[in-house]
Image (cartoon, one colour):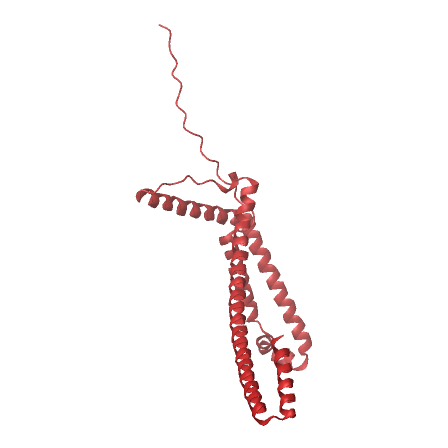
Length: 221
């Protein structure tokens, strides 16, 4: 019988690991920040007063020379320490190692979250590696936080404008009510004057009534 070759089953190819960045990530940046803080704190202890206390005679008779000497020593120490630190970081590839650690930790957190969701019976979507996203998706991922922030600012401004409009409407309504009350009061005065004029029969009172009516007409316009 002719031999039959059974094709080997192939497992799906794994997703390639994302490239490790050369620029400092969170932990590498934290290490550099701690080093800078330690250097500054150490050099700050070499203050002019502390340095002068070590050389009181020179500080008394030639303080300028002592100050220049202190400045040169501080600058040389800062330069030497930073050069040694950078050499160690480069030789031991510290930045890429810490960036790789950041990726491992993020991946572990993602796996833990997926395991918890799977345990709770929730559907789990397979994550997409960031380096496999399209340029438009990456751009949108960076743009969405900015748009959300701007939307929040616009909503806050809109609420403030609506509140100001409500207060303005209330003020206008109150002023209109006051004007109407004044007009009604003026009408009562005119009626009283007309009644008095009819009783008194004097021309000057009629002229006053006519003048008040003209004022009332102007206020209503």
